Image (cartoon, rainbow, N blue to C red; front, side, top):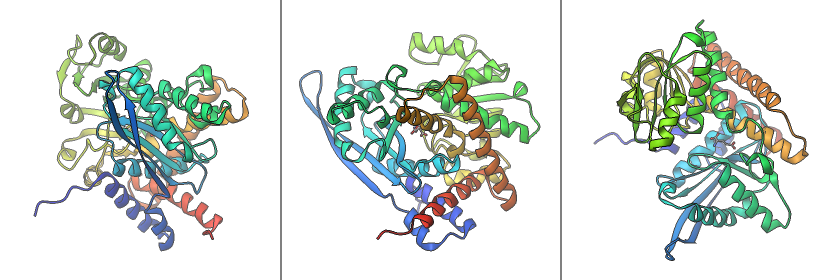
Length: 417
Ligand code: GLU
């Protein structure tokens, strides 16, 4: 019989089981942590520009609210599924716990292809989806944010729809909002910057200097491009970047700003002057110091894990490595900083934004970035300590540390009724 490939949620459950074993977790808490607290499926009918009606499907999963309101993004993608949304909401739970911000974990998504929709169609879909999930979101319940193919524009629509329904402005209902309606300075660069802060900690651990390293970045969206620009600025060699259409490579390094200009002109990074065009899978196997998968999940699998030629992998995307690949990389001594740590910068600044929205007290960008750096450094040190003490991978160590915090909150609150 052919080996069954695990679904993303099954993969995440395997990781939970591994961490629970290390922790010798109380079996009843382990049982509770295997299931999402609440999941909502909504139908999203809208009128398309041509006058016909289309009915999309949307989801919102609240995995845990033990440590605070559910928190996590909303993605628009044709491959969104309930399994994926639940898995991602589980990862959000560990992520918030790991970096010590007072949130649980949530995630949402709509099955659609935003690249084929007009702005008006996207606006109607976002507003109708918001009304669908309205009973379970709110500043004290569940706070959405941007994720794959959503950004500040969609957050503004969600904030406005929610506010219209309530009859007053509720900026705390989403994060990642535009600045002029209560967004936070630094939120748009937070995920990319956060990833570079943990990369610097990893480099320190190996006595390597950021100005000497070569980096390949898969994905050139909000998070990947910010990391690329910043690394280039501080003197690292960015040798490859990619988007869904392909990748560009130059082993001497290049200026990612030039690639962005090319992408803005042509719609893709491919064929950028001064670089060789290669495929996304070739990018993943390039010889480099640092590989940053910053696109979608499941790109490093048991098929290509033995060909990964990077010393350090920083998972900017959520779930880019399968469980099988994880083990292969660990056995091959590849130092992997897992998603729940590497991309926690986004939700950390979301927390800063939410605090600002609730208090009305605005922070400077310097305050935001200084606090972000401290939180990311602490997260890395906490995970590294557990990894060394227990001789386990950084992934399992990050989960052990995070799950312990969630379990502790559940124990302290006690089981209702
Ligand atoms: N979508 C981002 C993540 O996966 C940000 C979530 C948030 O800010 O709530 O971490």
